[in-house]
Length: 402
Image (cartoon, rainbow, N blue to C red):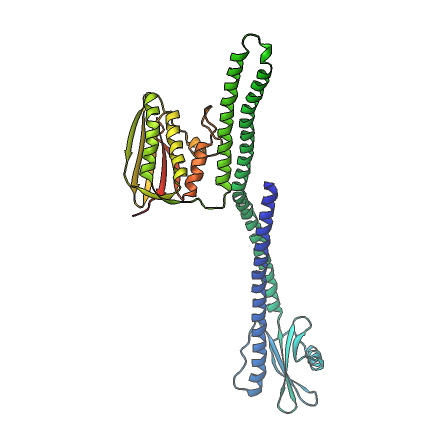
């Protein structure tokens, strides 16, 4: 699919470029041809009138040799100017005869002689002939120059279009690979709890065969089923929320809300859990920071970041949560002490189902959901690490000035 898409992009780019290049090169050639022909006609007409008026002598042009003759009513030929040295008297007579019998007053004969015929006075006819071999040579030379330029341009742009198509299809390729990984991981994650639920159900059905322990055994299996059902419910809800965030074309309903109040409420919820686990909390929140957003969605982002800090921080360490106001923006920060996030993980940590190392807790969807929510709010979310022990997650949102 990607190869086919790349070929289509290359074909489209090369088609448009080739057509434009052809138009430009043909225009240059035609313009040069018309300029040379116009200059030749002007010189022929000038030669006729200068020899008739005798005002000034003709200036010999080696690049355009000219022959001028006059023919009277008796068909007597008088040679006035002859810069075309290769023509003999018989050649001149033949040319004059061909010009006089021609239906056109201006044309090209013998492939390289351009003539102009004018009636002068009562009965005289003045004929000017130019040898245009130099002009034709220039046009042939320009034709091949333009051909070579066009060929080199097409080859060069062809290489560039291949490189460009690779860059254009890279995001599509990454998206397709992400979708494949997403489907594979989702299938695996959903399959595991379903398998446990089915196996426990079968054990309950066969509980009667286990004499003397059927009740306790059934309760234990029911607890397993309930636990795995809840896990699957959470996973499906997260998947549905991600799908909704990724594909929804409807804007999220937003109101002015006190972000400071949301953060404080979340801290009050998690504070007992933090202290029960033997960890410390350092909390700094600037009051009355107002943003435009959806309270439920932003509360979910705050909870995800604090919950992750609790899960992945080391025992007896401090979790630092802060909310500060910058220039027209609010900055929410959650910092914890634990194993540092590698540069590779920082670049991929917001991908669906991505989990660091061999972590088996969660499904790798929380940060992806948080990123999608913040994107809906036209904000930024990113991770930082000092490479030693401190990991920090930051969220920046546009604040509302009251």
